[in-house]
Length: 66
Image (cartoon, rainbow, N blue to C red; front, side):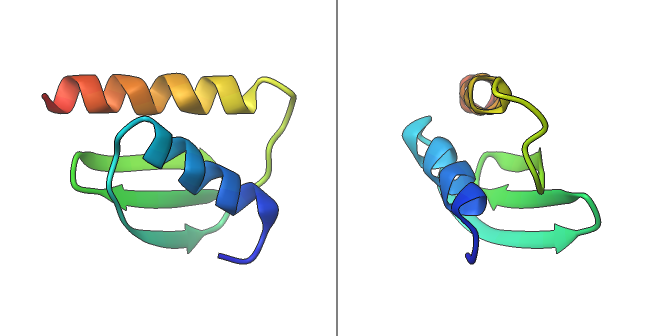
């Protein structure tokens, strides 16, 4: 992973307990493939809330995966 933003995204996924298997780049979004599913995040953050929104999405994904 090249940019600080992508490292931060991966860190958020791991902090929520997701196991990141791979990363796919495409257009304006980045897909983090996890055992629990796919988490789609913007390739560039749009505002200061992106981290909290991404963390909440990761927690929901972990919770729903069981």
